[in-house]
Length: 455
Image 1 (cartoon, rainbow, N blue to C red):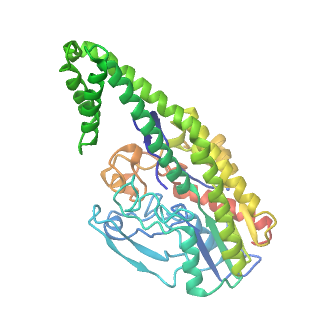
Image 2: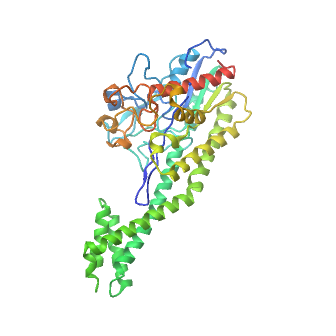
Image 3: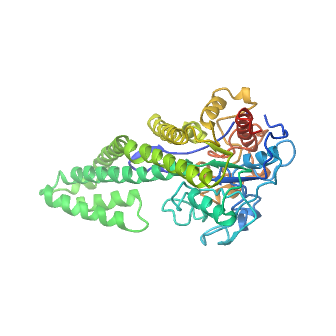
């Protein structure tokens, strides 16, 4: 997963996503003799799909702090679970990068037939265009593969025919669906805000002209022409509008910054208000309800394509509270509330659709994550607010952008951590756990499976 984008001129709020996990990681003899671990999901379960090319050369490849050995090694929660149940360590079922625009160009996509971890950073439930994909309209040029969960499952079935019933299957997804739904809301709210900004500015700039109607038409044409020009800026758009206004009969005074600056400020306020109003009015329809549909779809695949194809032990990890991450906590109350409602609805629908399905255990990462953030010391955590990785480090910005808010842990390692002991931080970047965070998630899964008699 990656962070949500800003609502542009429309809404002054950045929408961001994150995820984490849960608490005892002692390895014990499982009550059931598993033969393998099969995992479906996104970056939170990805064990190295993109550990290739320049990403690997930079010491990265997983969404955490890479390359650490010793007491808290750089292991994903699925790797820890494999050790817990005594099966081979997971490896990525596919590797590679699609983009030719960054990180040294594309790296051939290679299937790894013997590997059973199908999770990929950026993956959604059904849509193949996830965050970080080369095809995504608003994302980095990294070129993540983002194969969706439905295809991940189909690939596995294509390799083995059906589940044997002796695998432990893990499923964790939905965060990237939240991201893309909010991206769409951002685009629509920004459009509403931009329209309100333009209408307000045009009417104000034209008001002093001898013929306001004719002036408004000329100003509007100049504004729209500049807005459509590749490389335009907010300042150049305003400049074009002011320039067109000043040459209208009787309107030369509007060229004075003392005259047009207050008009611009007023138009900006109108745009922000319109964008925020759009987001508030349409958040449920465009973001919350579709998340419920994503939860329903995921549950259907689990029932028909996993359990229905022979799996007897399926651990489904729900979404953590994405609004309570370092990114989310810094956003507006309305934005946090919307993200929270999206997560809750997804989790509720997922749980409802999987109720009473034999062989399925729902792991409540949502409640656990909230507990960790509310009482970090109880989990041995020293920081649940800021990332452990130095997201200003050039390497960390390669997959998204060189800014702190958009940096990623995909290429984070011991060489670009923040100063001091960050081993017990919860977050590696603003959206992904540290090795310790993944350890907590593995412990949560272990506790639940032990209670179910699966361990």
